[in-house]
Image 1 (cartoon, each protein chain N blue to C red):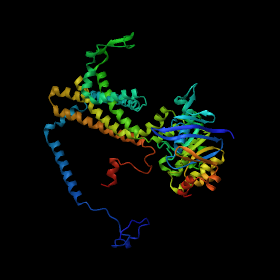
Image 2 (cartoon, chains in turn purple, green):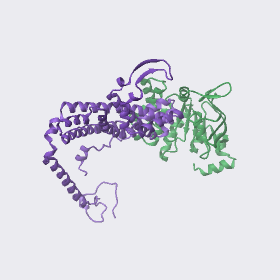
Image 3 (tube, rainbow over the protein chains, first blue to last red):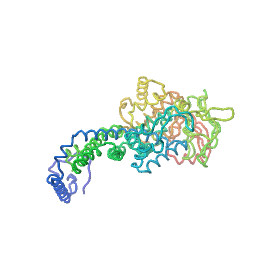
Image 4 (cartoon, rainbow over the protein chains, first blue to last red):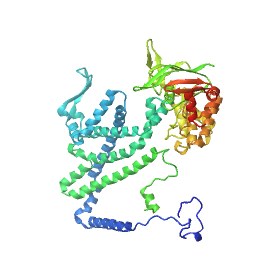
Length: 312
Length: 254
């Protein structure tokens, strides 16, 4: 009989004898794996061949425009929008999540209503809506409500430029999604943690900031990374309000030279590059917030370590 | 001895089911009172009412002469503001069955946190105090460890050090050894015993009859939300006359 034994391995001379408890334990064979690996490699080779040999891809044009000024400024716009909108979304989402969990029913309902509305309408509609806000409110003023005195006023069109409309549309929409992510994260923290904080004499806010949110981050970061990458591409919607992001910049170029495919490839490659950088950043942040949860000896699997380990 | 904790006619129910049916109790400074009884008898809930983790429906609870969580109005009790409640709670230490250490902070950060949050010490003093307390529970070597790297017994000793950091006047233990492997119970009871010998006022919900008998000054038997008996351990364990309590003690091996 075979058994797993905790003592030291026996000398090789005694191994390999059937029925000897010192016989090594082997993993099962996988003959199918060689076949599937070959098939997959073949598919990749065919794809690579097509990419290289089909002249219609016009890689020369991709190369020509890859670092062009128009594309570069488009990338700047895309990155700025992604950063600003995610920042607004995260802060707003945290506030909404805490409101949603408030004991005050009115506060909780308002947060719920916000989430319901902004998740329930297409973000494209929201973008166009903010862009056309002037049709609804020609003038914006700051003052007391219900006909009180006004202190400042301006025309809406002067305030809501395309960039502002884009930030409002994407940021406020993102807030609704982030609220649900943060709420889920807060709920994932054991109630005993808040009990302990209260018993120690911490206030509600201190418990949130010092105890609950740092632990909730572990559950919040992965979907937030997802949201950031989603936002990166969602910013391409701003072309409808003629804001020159990465995609719109590519469109500007191909509307003149009609090289549609090469310029879409250029834009896509840039989206892929930025996504890759964001993914690396995400795993860094995840590692930071898993303090105390990951044992020191456990090494996280990264693609590089996976290749080196040879266990595949 | 001066009075440290007083409960008067404390009542509480969860929804329609009553949990506490009029608890009256006086604990003097330096006393160790052990609450025992069947599960669901209200002993843990009563403990959580003392530091206002649970609201009470009626009655009064005083710690060191002050109401916890409420202020006496002309006609009624009014719940205090959050800050005031927090300040009172800092003077009442609590140790939980599940330790509830903060897993994202190191051991020493766990013990420093309350001092900094309640501004009882600045960062440097907090660290010194935390070091001393961790030394007292025999864990000065593990200051930089995370709770996930500790055994259950070590975790609970850190939790005790954490609760002591704000210099509480009374310590509440809510089944502090129930989640531990049997061989780790002793180290935690040892720390609790040392604390009792230093004169700390302690209210201990426990199933450790040996500890209750040795360290307890009084044993309170909870049953159906009432204190069914309040007796010194010699009488409680030695000459128990109540058949209900005899049956309960018979079920528990000690």
